[in-house]
Image (tube, rainbow, N blue to C red; front, side, top):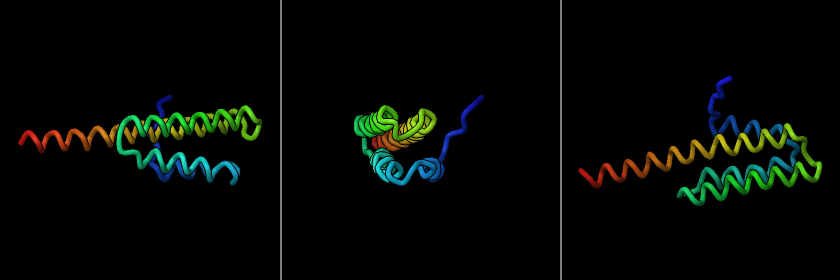
Length: 98
């Protein structure tokens, strides 16, 4: 089955399905990921979000399905963020050539 990319708004709604004490810190990671201004920063935020989900699952605070939801949400926005960074860098490169 093909997955359809989520918009940032849809991803935040997905995170809202989590308990409040988990949703808030998950959204901190999510917002940092969306604001990352380079590849390495975005990767660090994505990896941090994964580590957070893994820790919550290990502690039994969320189910494996909830942890997967968190990881998929971060991955989805990671790919969108990298695409946006690529587009902005390519746009700058194109202007400098002209």
